Length: 40
Image 1 (tube, rainbow, N blue to C red):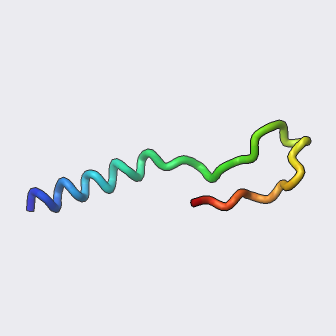
Image 2 (image 1 turned 135 degrees about the vertical axis):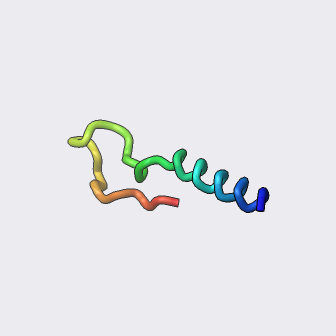
């Protein structure tokens, strides 16, 4: 039971580190391909 609790806590905490989808660098008016980049 303790292992399951630790696994669940690790999964919940790892979800907090996720960021928004990647955004191309630079000002918006200089971006050649305005589509969203594929996320991994």
